[in-house]
Image (cartoon, rainbow, N blue to C red; front, side):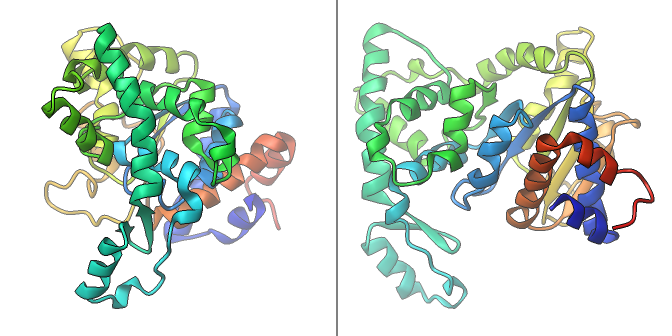
Length: 334
């Protein structure tokens, strides 16, 4: 894959993909770290097939994910065989989607999440965890419950490939992670219902503000040495929340901080007025998130296509750094 990208990705979005890949690897090779922000429905799209090996290979050192991506990685592990795909979804009528609802499925573009095998199975495991935390007066971050939960699932219950579950890989590595806006997810809603019924306390989950306060320290750790880069899929809160840590440390805490050492965004959002997803990277210079010297890349494409290509090529670099170095020499013919 690496040689293919270097030889064929020469212009336009292909060139941006190639250049972002090379800069990513050189940053890692030089001892730097990389932080990923993942929006969209990437877990349902099975990004874990390449994301999980990349975590195990030390190519990803921290994550910001939506609550949906967090839980959907777990759903794929415990209910994979019960998912149903709909390759002809573009031609569906309203009645077709009504039937999917009646079949207790929740469609996500061309695939679906099975309610009983995913939501309700996980609910049976996590609700007792919430109730115990309530009884003990414990307070934890949202992802910490899921880190414990996914490692507590009996391997005999796996339907998906555990090697393709990024949440399991992150939990085993105890990767730093933030889940901003976790309330906006299926289990955020389920948690709220148990709070409303008085069965669990809302206080057992630490807030988004506490996530940022903790992330100050996580960022300092990650940015030691050559620094930490920022690789973003999509836009919204998954990206905007963690990237703001740099100006917040600088202007709010009034402390010295290293800027992000690299930036790449894969997005199919067009540049538009006031859109975070569609903002060009250099706009972030004005917010002191990036600097004029930060390597910046925007790949205007589908992340389900581009991210696995980049991750596969990076895994090749990790397996054979010497070969990668030879291939990346400017002017190399293929």
